Length: 269
Image (cartoon, helix red, strand yellow):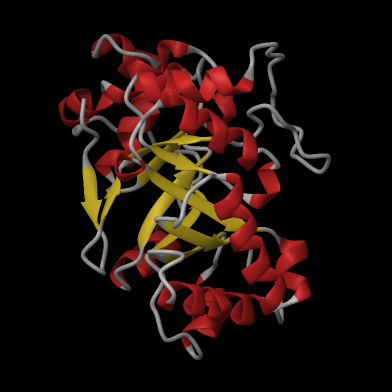
């Protein structure tokens, strides 16, 4: 089933639903203490399952520590590179080291993911005094064709305005935490008005609201899961969703495309 996409301000198409690779096969030492169920499965099989049920957009990052594994799993899946939408992000320690370190990390990412280009590459956090230079390094790689698009992550309005004063290429996206329980209207509206697409991580609240009575009642009414309700909520707000599960029931998340429109009059916040 082809995933619905959104047209970004440069005219490119970005899938609306992607698979997040955070904590798949590797848990960073400084990772959050969010619920992390034990999973003894081969992480490459988790990625292959995501491909099998229809995911083509994979959200990666230097910080996740697993890009080589993801790259091998995608290669083993046999899916043509042209069908994939690969996104990665440069982490704070590399940003702090400066532009040359950022460029080196992008080249490492390309090697790990076994690809000649990335569809989108983001500055993971707006490291004070360093993030603008990191972004400008990505602008150079964009001109070389190594990255097709540039974006940011966890940027506030103030961070963006600092970047805007020096950038030559407008970011395509801003990846931030968004869900019905953390809906920063002013920030989201600002970036949307700028023509910058919002991507949501923790759209499912790390599973913390699956027993929320309001969410459960909407799910029961529409004969779907609480995860589908939360995903649909983001889609209805024109926000890209990064989903994640280690189980092959991921197909349920994809079915949300047909269900989301039937929930448009429901309020989950």
